[in-house]
Image 1 (tube, rainbow, N blue to C red):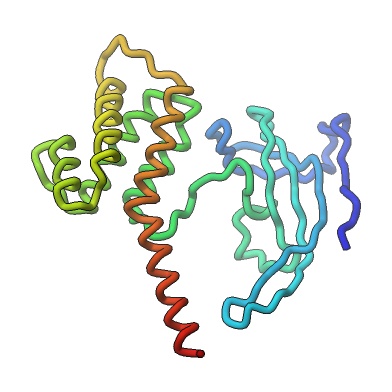
Image 2 (image 1 turned 90 degrees about the horizontal axis):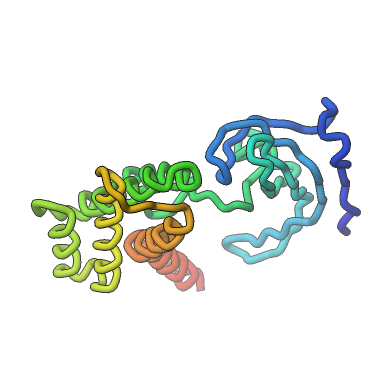
Amino acid sequence: MRSSPIPISPFTMDTPNLPRHVLYCPHCGNTTVQTRLLAQHFMEKYYGVTDGDLSLMDATYSVAKCETCSEILVYSFTDDAPEETLDTPFGTLLFPKFPGEMKGVPDAVRDVYVEAVRVQNISPIAFVVLARRLLEEICLDKKAHKRNLADNLKELVSRGELPPVLADASDLIRFIGNAGAHASKTKITVPQTWAVSDFLKVIIEYLYVAPHKINQFKSRLESWTNKG
């Protein structure tokens, strides 16, 4: 049974009793103080991986505010989770979703992507430069070793690893990244980075995340079949 929310008045923001932690904020890219404004208890549902049985665990949603940019963040905390397994003292960040872990993505590719996300709202120019760098890392991982990024993307298409439509979008990102890396009259704004960000998610999903999920599904299917 869910309990009622535990509100914290906004007029007590300066009191020392509010839970505060220094955490990374994906909104502004700063590691700074976040203050919990609201806590809501609920029952978290868990299903056994092997038997599929349902179990319930006490958990808490927390709404926090970044004290630097004043944006809101939402966390989920399982009450009896071991402390060493917690992502943050408030629990797991639910909003805004930050891609700290991407299953099946090589470390070098993931690290550049995470770095790009960190600076997206702070420096759009730095973001598009890192977006181009991300494409280079992908080509390195896929062992495309032509003379430049454009030729490497064409190589991935010729192998069938990259659909032509994604290669076309990659070429546009390469162009925008070049504009950001060199003196140019081209203005790059935060809204312009949104389309680039959406594409980066698509190409990472296509090349890494989806194949990883398919392999996981095959493994589970085999284990279920063998037990049957």
